[in-house]
Structures are given as structure tokens and as C-alpha cells.
Image (cartoon, rainbow, N blue to C red; front, side, top):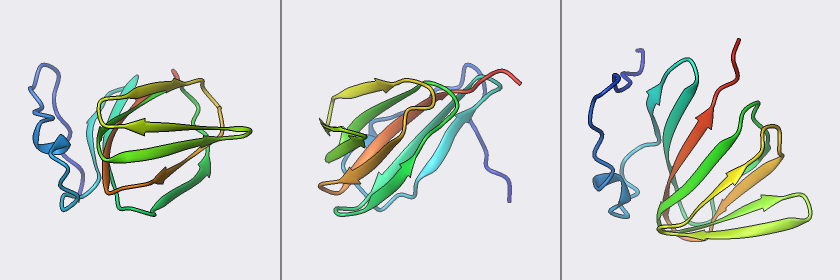
Length: 110
């Protein structure tokens, strides 16, 4: 089954995604040629292994607390905080608490 993404101009309510509930699944909210928004649910202790993406990205913590791990440094992110990573920058994410994050990816042109 194909994912249903929001259309241009369609309203997406982030409040329920930021209520701290980790019962909802991770899902891609929007995907266009140049942009993708992903709502990620991570349970305490869950780790996304180190990886890198082709475009710049914004990681915004909506609820809980995560730790962004990059070679040589770590950055804690609590609810209401965000950070930006350069394209191709290796990183991993560790959930210190049950957490919801919004990932915004700028997709490179084909």
C-alpha cells in the first residue's frame, strides 16, 4: 500500500504528534521533489544507527528527549529544540526518553 502524503496547501496538525504519545507509528507526512517531512517515534533506548543523507536536514524534537550523535560530538535535543545538519554529515539518534521528532529533509535535485 502506498503512503498518502499531504498535498500542497493541506494543513497538518502537529499538536497530536507532539503530545508525547509514542503509540502512533513513524510516518512520512510530506514528500515533494525537493522536500520530505517525517514524523519519527522513538522509544526510550531506541537508536537509529549512524547514517548520512544526501541533503541538508532539520531535526526537531516535538516531545521527549533525544541525543544526536555525530563523530566527535553529541547534541541533546529536548522538546521544542531543533538543529540543522549539513548534507552528507554522518549522524545517529538515540532516544533518552520516549520521543517524537520531526525530520525535515531537503532532497537534492535529480
